[in-house]
Amino acid sequence: MNTTTNGKTILSNDTHEMATQGAESLFSEQPRGDVFKKMAIIGCGYAGTAVACHWQKQGHFVKVTTTREERVAELEEVADQVVIMQGNDAKAVHSLVQNQDICLLSVAPISTRQVDAEVYRETYIPTAKNVVAALTETATVQQLIYLSSCSVYGNKNGDWVDETSGVDTDNEYNQVLYEAEQILLNSAPEDLSVCILRLGGIYGPGRELIKRLSRLAGKTLPGSGESFACWIHLDDIVTAVDFACQNRLNGIYNLVNNLRWTSRELCDYVCDNQGLERVIWDATKPSFRALNARINNQKIKAAGYPLIHPETIV
Ligand SMILES: NC(=O)c1ccc[n+]([C@@H]2O[C@H](COP(=O)([O-])OP(=O)(O)OC[C@H]3O[C@@H](n4cnc5c(N)ncnc54)[C@H](OP(=O)(O)O)[C@@H]3O)[C@@H](O)[C@H]2O)c1
Image 1 (cartoon, rainbow, N blue to C red):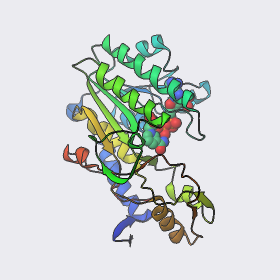
Image 2: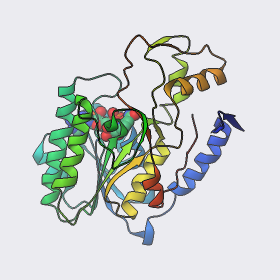
Image 3: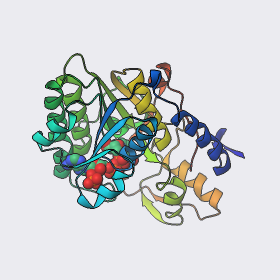
Image 4: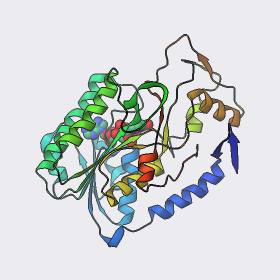
């Protein structure tokens, strides 16, 4: 069943299942021309694992990384080879990308808690530098995809932004993300396609927005709640990564769904639907969200990518 709020249609879980079935049929598609490839995923967390699973189902050879021994068994379920390594280990990165066809970079510091800017820098920058150095010496890799973030746009007072808009150079975290993008775009060999996907906040199975926002019901949050956030479903990340590979995408692409809601609108929507008390906003305190912009997603659509979940909240 569909429900509508403020003229915007949101799909319920029922319809989401239908949308997901659509996604599964996309997922089960064989690679074009039955060409099976060697895929390397550096940083195999929430998004990386979903992509690994998809590529393995397609019959590709999938090699993934983790920094933690305890994750190896879990990752062996979705990958042909699991390597324990850190992105700052140049030799390990070099060895990982040898003879690969596609490389996905999907690293992030532990996302369940806030890390300081130095840890953030240590996670992204040496990894990006080592990846371009390794790819410069490895002629087999045709496509690099880096999962970046729309948070690089920062606070634009709710204005529309696209891939040509300026980025936020004040926030240290956004500086790091943007610097990593620039290293990958500007230092990679010319014959390598480099696609930067700037993601909205990721949601999907295990990271359901409904559950996450329901926990905030009745609580007071800092800020007016009037800042625009952006979101993307896990299924869309998986299929857009595949789309980028198949179409040799080059350059920066925003990957967000079609909802342009403020935090207040989204929280109200979820709380109202769940029969919960609304979130209370305290405008006297600064919001902890660095992003306040409406993100234009036309570029990836114009390239031919159809969103699987343009307006689904789960
Ligand atoms: N989460 C979001 O809402 C969001 C929003 C916008 C953009 N993004 C971007 O999307 C990508 C994927 O996010 P995610 O939520 O799937 O991340 P995630 O679940 O936190 O997974 C991150 C992965 O990076 C690995 N890692 C951490 N530090 C590393 C290092 N120094 N060297 C090598 N690997 C390292 C982790 O290793 P372990 O296996 O040892 O944990 C893990 O496999 C990231 O690039 C992130 O910046 C995420």
